Length: 89
Image (cartoon, rainbow, N blue to C red; front, side, top):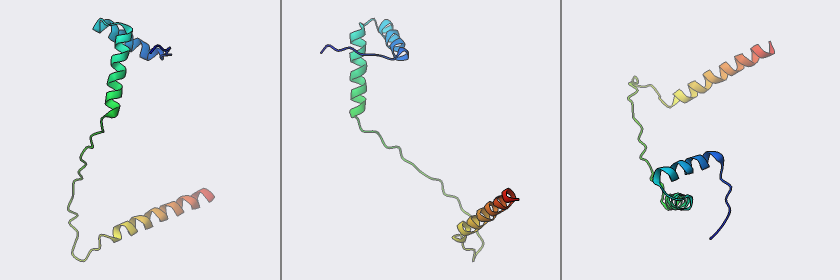
């Protein structure tokens, strides 16, 4: 197949470098790069395993850890209200 391509300048420089380095024609280099890209596109991406580290909280007996989120929400709300009050001044 014969076609005309418009290649960005930065890509053209890299292709020309490969052409010189490998001693191949422009057609050979572009076909090889296209094959590699298309082959890579067909492979499924490998999923990386994700692990989290657990930490002991060393909470005192009777302490409800679930209430920590509520406490953080209350602190953030108070801070927001203080900022609003200062802006209204």
